[in-house]
Length: 189
Ligand code: SF4
Ligand code: SF4
View 1 (cartoon, rainbow, N blue to C red):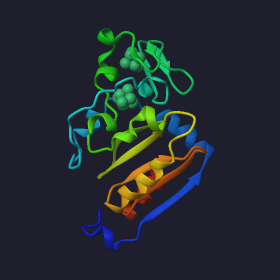
View 2 (view 1 turned 90 degrees about the horizontal axis):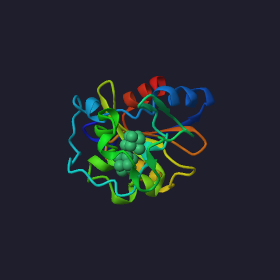
View 3 (view 1 turned 45 degrees about the vertical axis):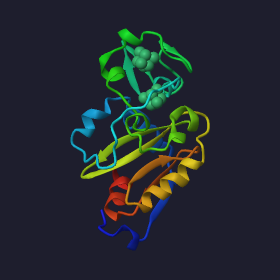
View 4 (view 1 turned 90 degrees about the vertical axis):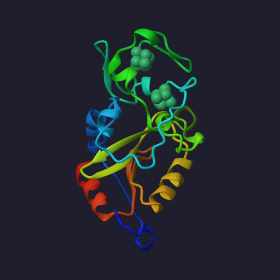
């Protein structure tokens, strides 16, 4: 990352690929315990206070791919234990991994604006790593994402953060000022 991000050109590009989107469904939108990944991350802008989900059930609705008690969760197939807009009907008995361990980045980091709550913007934020880089992955979680997320991502990139999103048509967007991260994202995501 540049030591002086403001002196760098901001890079932003997008491209569309149906095949790539399918591949990412299979491996990219995992409903897995982010803390396992974050063990190795610098958490310099993470304020681990934890917000309440408060009626949000986005991570149980199939936008993140996993298996719960032998049943697959994927787009169009939400968890059978979900009480939409209420919570989990088996809250105390829910599996440890991923259900008890998982937190989206909005929930775990109170520095993320309140308005980015997943059920308000139809998008789930995940903190991820790619080689030596940390980045925020914005996963679409509804019919239409709030377009404000793109403006927010662009602003964050000016502060040296790396953010990856997909628009509603499946186009990959990379917000970063770091050429190496951009190149890596283009090759590997
Ligand atoms: S997406 Fe985040 S806020 Fe929503 S239920 Fe899951 S952990 Fe809670
Ligand atoms: S078991 Fe509960 S917490 Fe886990 S995915 Fe299903 S509804 Fe969500």
